[in-house]
Length: 153
Image (cartoon, rainbow, N blue to C red; front, side):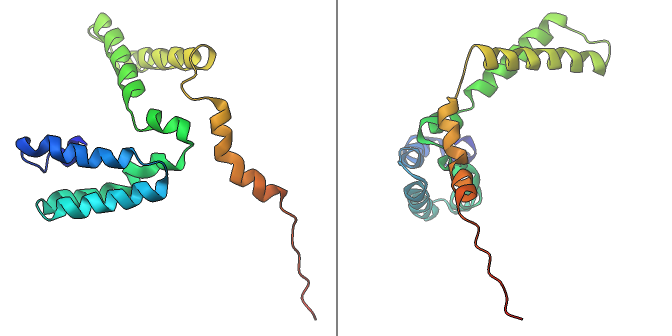
């Protein structure tokens, strides 16, 4: 969103942001893609660079729509990543000056391992049941009978 709004005058930011947000309200990937392209075409007439930016970013921005519906709001948010970065920064500020690069790697690695353990044991950001839906097409393909055709010699 920030990248897109950088192509628009400040006074138009709210209008453009509202138009782009309509994409994220769509229930499925097909309709989200359709609305994305409509919004890009509408905005392209006034801001050609914004339209080009939206064309280029379409697959990256809409990648989250391939996941189960219950996870989509969590996937298009960077809140967990920002929270993790804030925790790493807080711990690094306590140390102040690091004697070498290895000490930084040890500290950041320890923070990341601690967060990983915490998420595995206490907090589950995404439910495993919903993630099982991602493997469903693969499971169905594995259960299909194998068709072997013999060539006539």
